[in-house]
Image (cartoon, rainbow over all chains, first blue to last red; front, side, top):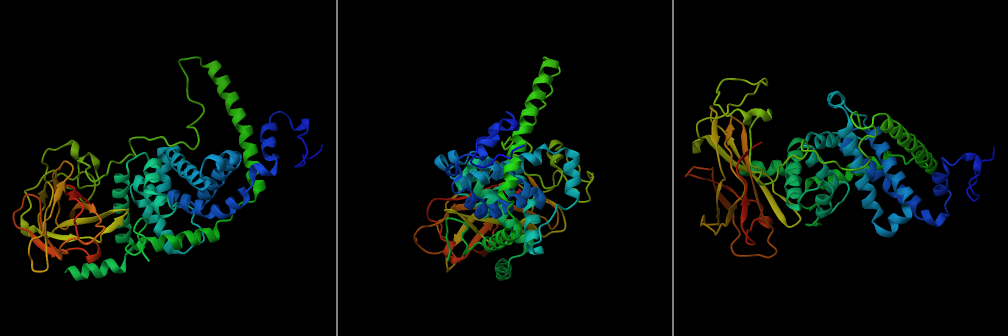
Length: 195
Length: 256
């Protein structure tokens, strides 16, 4: 059997089944120009987002990979009509949310009881994610989109299907709770001053 | 140093924390080589075809009555379900101080009927007296053009008591002179029962002043809902202190 080379037409043996995928992947370089750099530059941020949303590093890496796969499949359209960075982040958020929802109640309960797979980062960072995930889910998402995905408030409202005013309130509440739980020296000083 | 429109690093202690977190994850997350992405795309194309075929077969078999959805929720789409659409804006209308959300279903005053958890909250209690509450302002946050501050009332008495409504506010200048304090109560109030030591909170929100305007408030007189006597406490830091572009929106006091 002949291996399909990048610059050759797909041989018939590979079958009609994979012809479409193969054609996409062996498309002229121009169609995917810039994807490699985009992928390498943004991958880490997407994982950071997905980990903050799921609390599981393996799951987060899988979500990131899936999101980039989808971007790769429609790269030429994406770069023409959209901001690929925002697009891939939105896909990752939706994946994290929908996977969480699809889990059975029993599995979700079990997962809550155990810690997800943590990345080899300092306990401070893991603690931040733990606190994020103790917030109500909508607030967690708003916080992640704001602080990690760098979305504008309008984009956050749009992604989460709510109004900008609501997003602001969620951010305030999330921020306040995390600062309270993780401690903030400036806040402590303020409180001392008030007494 | 501060960018008031996004994250406001000058006033936002979390911005640097999140930046460090992102850096840490970036350094340990290894992007799989492109060949792995290739293979994944290929595999999905294959399994999609199988799923479609399976759905076709099942559809043919179960014409009508037993149409179980074979293909799960379509990937990557946000499906909004009411269980996670927690309404929690400034004016969310009900607030029940307890981990059991069903407490509002039975408004019968049951002062001594614990509902499972160790810390039970009675459905009602006598109104809080002014002396039973201690007021405090939390650190403000600036989000885009808005300033948010949470005003907390802690029950410092030894008995449960109840508050309902919006707080009263009067800004005070350097000489304890009263300053104009436009307030707009927002949202419907529901009774909040405060156990000894527990905290009810109201959210204050106003537009961050773009210019200096009149005297900068130094302190604020805070009145708990339904109480005449207020407590004077320090107002927030000078940079955010003035309120001149529209009123302070206040939420009712809610459970925390």
